[in-house]
Amino acid sequence: VFKYESENDSVLEVPREAYLSCNNTHSAIRAYSKMEETRVELDHSGPYYFISGSKPNCEKGEKLIVVVMAAREVSTPALAPSPAFEYEGPAVAPTSAGSELKLARVMMGV
Image (cartoon, rainbow, N blue to C red; front, side):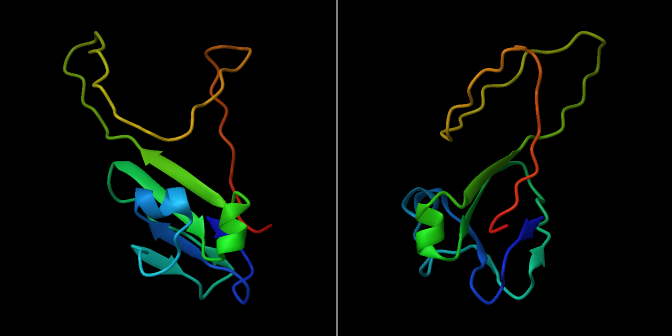
């Protein structure tokens, strides 16, 4: 869910290259600008790249990468090794707890 002021901003789903450069012209896969609260359906596995439709806001960090993992079926009780996954997003700093995973709800433009 993205929350933003629709008269001043928008949310764009863009290719990786546009994400890296905050390119908001003619490269959007999808554009969301009609509502102040936008729900985005993530319907396939892999990375999704979102940026603010306002280039200055994007350059200030209003952008987000979401990686959807594919579901796996395990036929035996033993876990199979994880497949290699190529991901060139930002590095995630380890937490002091080591194995804890904390999730945050991201809101743009709030």
